[in-house]
Image (cartoon, rainbow, N blue to C red; front, side, top):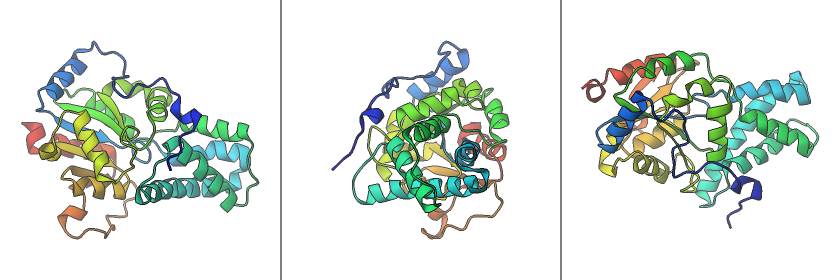
Length: 281
């Protein structure tokens, strides 16, 4: 059984068209031509946990439920949010990410001994999720990429079209850089979540690459499961290790189970990709 709420099914975002503004800029025109000619290197940025900090929701959580519980609720919320997507994949089922996010919020609140929230409180938190803060290293990296026309840049997310579109265009931190991205690609159309292989093949299709060209695409993610999923289908992948703890995921042995590059910030990763042979060429 697949559950789709009326709230999740409503949205102004059309997955078949580019929602980004300023389509007449010469830089974006060059990117569109490169993508259409099937020659460009694609850099796909994960959104939640990579560009946007899910920990930044703690301010709103603290306002509603007390600062002493805010950090724990935020961490538990994120844990269950991801766990729900993996369980749905295993069950061969699907819920829109907005529903997953709401349900995992209620789970997190219950686990942290918070009474059931009002509908208004949930709506407020979901609205705040559309305006998450970026990590400090994001703006300088996107500023650098805004001057590069030889790559195709996309946001690639588990979120719904509406959620991701809202985040890219409404986040005070991220919206100034929305025109850096050529497109937004979400999993909503294929109804699977990362790290299911069909999600990465869907990305390839959206940017004009075939399955034989998966190696022309770079994933940039702060989530190890996303990195391993991308590598499993032949993509190149970079892991943002902001905590500086080093790679410890042991699911897949050898090079296929590890990132092609690890950076402590997004700037290091962008520089590494731009210096890679095909991108430089």
